Image (tube, rainbow, N blue to C red):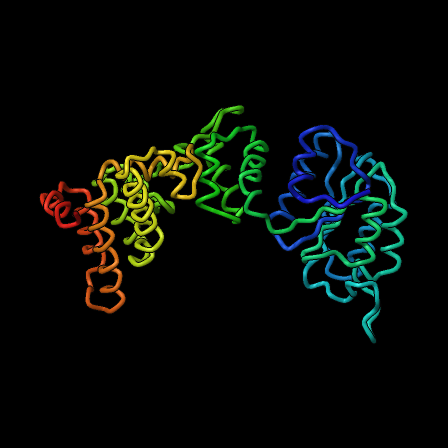
Length: 363
């Protein structure tokens, strides 16, 4: 029938569609392989199919799959047989030939299994999941001709938000724009972590709800701060919250240099850039453009709010101090790194009596 990307396949399951008896899943993204199989299994179970799972490490397991599908079942008139071909199964070849001195013993090289797959018809479904980047050439050609090949490739950057929407939809939820942006910024191509956070959020939400950015934060007081939590508190001017997050993060093992590089330096640079643009009399939209973000971006709005709150003078001084602190920690001149980091944050957030004097100096 065709080759489908994982995202297109998952979207296709939203509506009733006729699925071919043979479906092959492969690709370099291990999480997507398993997610596609789980989504497919869930959809077919709703249609009355019974699930049967097999793990194939050698040709004996493949013969068991053939036996399962060749016979009837008194308790399940329609079955979904999922055959996971393990990564350790390397006896066949990937390009249609045969390795010297070896029998064709995997799902790509076993002639009897390939012949069975090619002639397989319904009403049951056979799903073959390969724990590898590509399916063997013979099986791949058969799937493209008479079945469906699902390619679980690494996602492109412009697909990350679409995957977030799909994960939310599978949980019966919708995503607000700020939540989608937060997921993409926080996890990038780590789709497993993205889906996991949405799964946790779904526990406390009613079906059909819209997931907001605030729903993605875990309420537990003793939890390790999520990435960008410290930067968020800083941009909002929450001194006590920022210091608490820093204390908790370092107590749970986060390195001070990592907090500087990942949390503080980026948000300070964004706020300073926005402050410089706003100081020229330009609009917030112009500041967002200078940041390389859309005007409605929550990250851009946060940077603009921080720029207005702290001002260019204080932000420039904080950025210089941060660079000096980073160099001092790396040189070993500062041992009490957490205290030094908290001091930097307090200096930024506390009213600075020397701001007016520094304005004259800059002028």
